[in-house]
Image (spheres, rainbow, N blue to C red):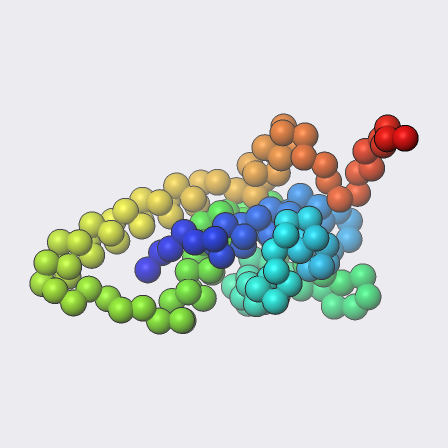
Length: 149
């Protein structure tokens, strides 16, 4: 079952951060945690799941970190949401128990989830990176002038 939880939103932020800041070197997890305020322990679990799913690529070594496994225009928000939803499903949840839930509510919820995922599949990391640039969000490698005295 699809859940848009804080965990899902943090995973999307992490992948956008990697897409936005991975040039030319991979982005280190600790840098993502500093910029986005995502707990390190949570981030590593999600990053490994995203690597296994082929959304991210892990690079080992002292200059290692994460990059997108595909071009930014080929990685969608839907890709990330599906991975986190799979992690959430592994934690287990009960399905509908009543005939009304099975026959009416569940099919409605499943249809809404499909519609939402279809929309999320049309939003790419490229789209979100462009929006970050439009909003003038600084990249990790950019240095802004400091006018403080």
